[in-house]
Length: 98
Image (tube, rainbow, N blue to C red; front, side, top):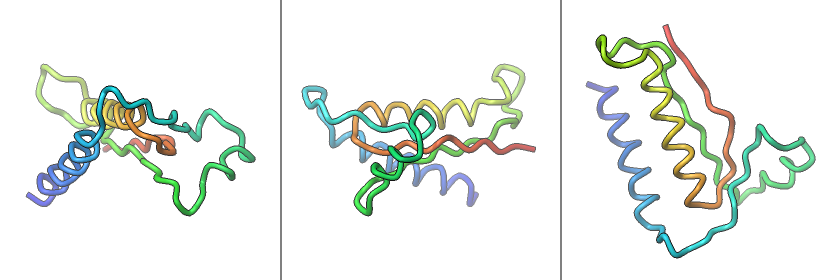
């Protein structure tokens, strides 16, 4: 039950963040840390920078109809959507599993 509450709270935060943006707005592009060199990253990582980190289970069974990486794929999708709609620094995703 703790896991369900945690993922619901993350979903609520993401939905709240996305609902405040409008399609007509064109925010500055997000910065993906994996795609830049460290001097650029040092400039981007200011005290005011908002950094997002996607965390998803890489190998959890969800029945025979879904791939084991379903949780990780969902985390990646949400990360991409937030990055498209906001001006954030995007850290490389973390995949865990058992």
